Amino acid sequence: MEKRANFGSKLGIILASAGSAVGLGNVWRFPTEVGTNGGAAFILIYVGCVVLLGIPLMVSEFVIGRHTHKNTADAYRQLAPGTPWVFQGYLGVFTSWFILCYYSVVAGWTLKYLVSAVTGQVAAISDSTVYFSDFTSNPWMPVLYMVLVILMCHWVIVRGVQEGIEKSSKLMMPLLLMIIAVLVICSFSMPGSSEGMTFLLKPDFSKITSDVVLSAMGQAFFSLSIAMGCLCTYASYFTDDAKLMKTAGSVALIDTTVAIMSGFIIFPAVFSVAEVAPDAGPGLVFITLPNVFQIAFSHVPWLGWAFAVMFYLLLLLAALTSMMSIHEPVTAFLLERFSMSRRNATRIVTLSCVVVGTLCSLSFGPLADVRILFGMTFFDFFDFVSAKVFLPVGGIIIALFTGWKLERKMVLDELTNHGTLRSRLFPVYIFLIKWIAPLAIGLIFLNELGLFAL
Ligand code: PHE
Image (tube, rainbow, N blue to C red; front, side, top):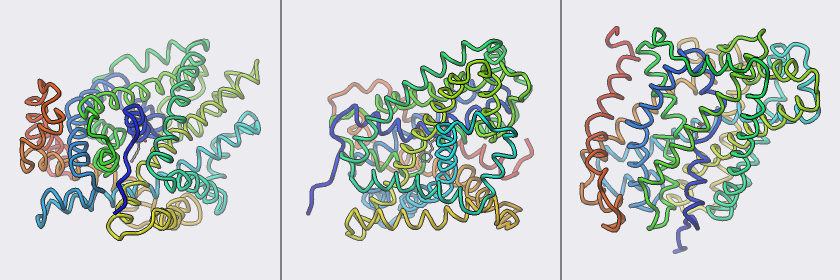
């Protein structure tokens, strides 16, 4: 049998995993959530969720993936053969695919805006709301851009783990981090930007409700790519000397830093141009920002151009590295379970995603009136089900699985690389994963389903 692929270096491992974590969730979703949910108060709760729930769950997925060196579905099959736990393996693969389908739609928008920024169109938009809705409701264009980004992702995945995922992450992630640094500096230097900082840093605890806590947790899970099978799949390519706890800590740190930096890019810019509201919702980056670019740089147009190009390039890079990480679990599953060639497995995933992604994309246009459940369009449905149902459910199962089912010695062996690393944090990790994570996620999830009116 062919030798299974693995990442070639520790840096590659961290950059690929961080590439998965850093995505539209950081640049697009996080600032929107901060804007609508009480600024710094939300950030505090978010960081709490990352540390207490996110990192332990990430570590658990790493343990499962690296121990088995198998795709997610087969990993659970190996660890708990013939038991209902196997379900989580399939759920992970399915969730990845599910997210890929609607995530690609927004990724497509970022490509479109990048093209528009480069050609100077963003600077010439007269009404950005109309521009956005004209584009997204068009039956062809958004689908075309979506297909293009999926093909970019396909191009990477088909090249395999080291040549595709690792190489491209090593190129794209440093570029992404550099762009962020430049943009933060630009944004800070705009007049009136300090108000944006105040907005971001001043906590408004009156806005914190159970709903907001749920959003923070959902955002943390989404942003760290937890419970989707992708961390587990990436970890199955980790080398035996990779330090799992340290890697999880670094990935969480990079991810959270990028999210907060994105807030630092967006809010000072938005506030320096007083006309636009900071809680504009998901339209923030596609509707509010083009206005900001125009107004803020009306005196130096080339600066506005450069800011817009860098910003949308940042979004596209972030989206692509994340898409790779949800494409791979499904590809790896098909490839290994059905002994397919990588080429064919990748093709199947790409094609199915184009078909379903098209439905999601069209739900902003010709299919806008098609409501599939509780008044949700295709896109809303995919977003809601994955972020609010699959992720918490997957999170609870993973926590219970590692906390209660897996042999303690095996988990300890993985985390200490068979006794060669120190294990000071091990009891804390076990406590969090065994008790806190399932309880917290369970409570918040049940509350979301309306079981108790908190
Ligand atoms: N973590 C990514 C983000 O923040 C999103 C993502 C979702 C990545 C699902 C992989 C899988 O945007």
